[in-house]
Length: 309
Image (cartoon, rainbow, N blue to C red; front, top):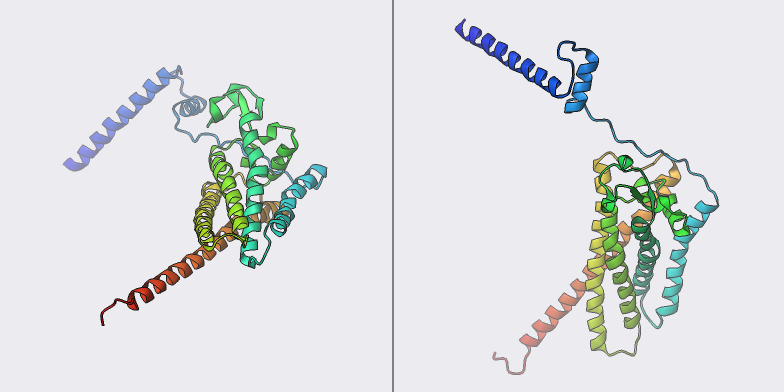
């Protein structure tokens, strides 16, 4: 009984402290203490943060329509593939093997995409904007400009039209998403030049007139740069989509098969399988080189002219 009485007294005391704290909070909020209604309690809850905050507004899903702007945007993105193929046929001559040609074509397409498609995306993120009321700018605020909304959505340039189209499937690319921009800064200013450098190395290696020693040095640079670029592209693709998957994919629109299979899957899956293939070829190249080096080292040390028996 004594234990029960102690619990009851403790409950009464804590209940009194709770009501006293509640009355104090009401007084701070400027509410009437004596006339407490459901509406005033709800108002108090919203002021002190007890109720759930409102959900952020979601971007409207736009149905796919094939108009002139959409057609030109898709055509421009796709025309880089035959351009890369023609560059490979033109620049890679001689008896260069098929693997070398494929490496050149992929990295040429990679460089063209980074520089001529993703490069303008960064430009619009930093220089295309619309003036808005600071109260309408929800955080995080890009470049600390509370009265501006940045992104390709707010430009009428042809390069912005392409990203306005892609943003129908992934809304982040229409504005200035800090995660996407951070990845694209590395992609454009490091990945693009690295892909161009790989194409240059492949062009040099395809020249049969260079000495074997120089060709070996070029091959070393080629595979080292290829490994770094392929790894970075796999990591960049993961960091582009993983945060969105972990937060419910609210920015992705998969209501149309065009958005799902063409925009999101086709234009991104290339940067998964192609880098994996490059890494596999680099592994084969390094394995063969180290095996050859070890074999040569073992044979020279085992059959030297001055070796004692």
